[in-house]
Image (cartoon, rainbow, N blue to C red; front, side):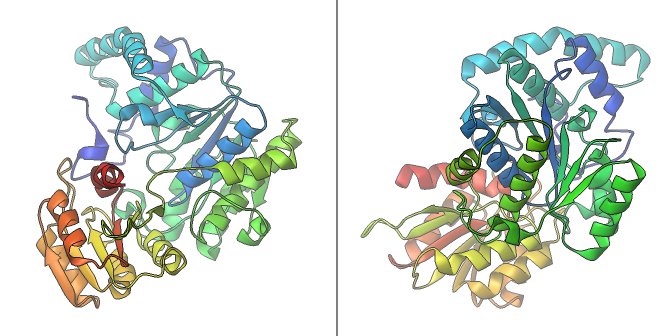
Length: 419
């Protein structure tokens, strides 16, 4: 936890100087190349990659395949990053993995101190390597690796997958990935490997053209999926936007079937219905006389905020909706606020306790007010912000906690405890 962790810094770098794939490759080599021979599905995308990864893995599990998922960040426990058949790694697994990693990491620390060639492994590099070791040790039949940031320079991009996946392209991490959708798409398309099939859910013309170009340059078959292709399929994840993610997941399964994987239509139906992912339009129903309904969501860009807002009317017949919101400074804050503010009767702007990246609550409150939410307060402590929301929301109303994965991670345990 004392390593460089770009999930918890105010300014996230994205260049070859800090993010060195050779360092990741060396770490895996020192660990005995645990990625070699694993059947990997590599998933990138601005939004939807966590949901799509969960759906793919759930379908493969339903088909009788032992399926590992590496995801980030975690909500409550670091072990959540490594799950097999929907079950996070145990504390004992974590201890074993740390002990396995320690000699290789310390050797690289020493080598880096002498030569300054690659430097010591980062938090994300270590957790990525731990995932590959864990899934190899547990003899997984399939591994779904979710990209952390971007694609081209992400630590997961050392893998050779059976299929590469790009779920969507929208504005996020623009300081790192680029200010245009084409620039962002090119970074995401960095996961495309020569000859490896690509499944894409990207719909906008500009980024779609980039992905088509990169796939063509690298000799890859490109499978493009439309949300309508998931019509008639029921998913365990809420929101109309999940139809697009389900279409991509089904496209991946179709490609794997073409490679000889045995996955039945019934496994697809069972897997999509059984897919679960916390903090994705996650509804905690109202408790009469105790609390209003609560939705916890990790929306952190304009597109995902709009998807949340579009999902709200179908959840509960609420009378008065309260927003509890915190947003990281490196996001397109105004876009997120513009999507959220008009939908809510009242809003409470807050911050994170465990991460320095949040916009100040007072600035965020001003933006929410300017964007059309009339009743706005700023509360520095997120726990106090949630209590204020409970105090001010009618019992038949709704509280939505959103704006950041970090806020969802900090407040979800309190919601669960009150459930």
